[in-house]
Image 1 (cartoon, rainbow, N blue to C red):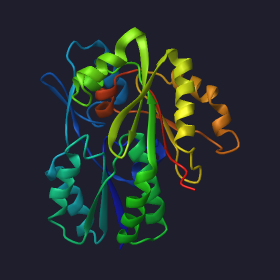
Image 2 (cartoon, rainbow, N blue to C red):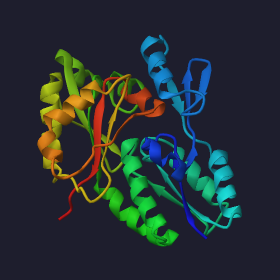
Image 3 (cartoon, one colour):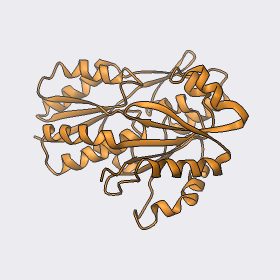
Image 4 (spheres, one colour):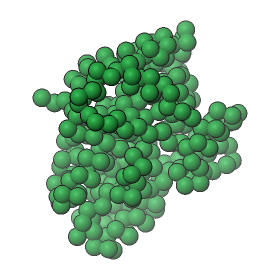
Amino acid sequence: MSVKIVLDSTTDLAPELLDEFEIVHLTVHFGEEEYTDGVTIDKKTFYEKLIESDVMPTTSQASPKAFEEIFKKITEAGDEAIAITLASDLSGTYQSACIAAAEFPGKVHVIDGKSVAIGTAILAEYALSFAKAGASAEKIVEEIEKAKKDIIIIALIDTLEYLQKGGRLSKTAAFAGGLLNIKPVISVADGKINILGKARGSKQGNNFLVKEIEKAGGVDFEKPLFLGYTGHDDYLLKKYVEDSRFLWEGNTKTLRETCIGSVIGTHVGPGAIAVAFFKKTT
């Protein structure tokens, strides 16, 4: 018997890890057009539509049935499942997973990842390392519940417009962040979105990101680290990596990155860059 890790499609995994997990897909809507995240719409097509469309996209949480189908497949094969979802404060997907898991007592465990996108990705990678080492489901859940408290995403975004229109941020906060062509710096920690400050231009924003990483206590390079961007290219992300080279050199051999998918892209918009890491605890 082995332990299988189940994720929702808002988790932006490194491509080489896609086959290691079971994925439950959310949906994205452009008006009357409905797409299955990561299945019937890819990232490139999504950002083209986001930029060109007059219709603001919306998203729908994963259903209990979608989780139930995967849980059934795993348990019928004699294995146990651990589902790690995006933060329950940001979506009802966690609740859907809990409803489905109730049909498989003792065989399916659900964790509120308290993060999103690349944040959930590094938590999933950490869980996978325990599963591959042969740890029990109970042990993995125990370790992940502790570790998730140390995950931080810090992001420089182009505008707060998408977060406000998607209902993840108040109009007052979005208006304040949009003044004077200022780029907001936000964090996701313990499942909540926080505005850390505002910067004029990407260079000042990059400096802000570095300071916030240091303020958080620094990066635990013994655990997974991941970078992400939204939109069509990673130019701004590469500039950030160059500007903050002193943080990474000598601490990690490679900095992995990915384009953030359509569900989170809906709420953040194009032109964002982000880093997800486990903060140092000692």
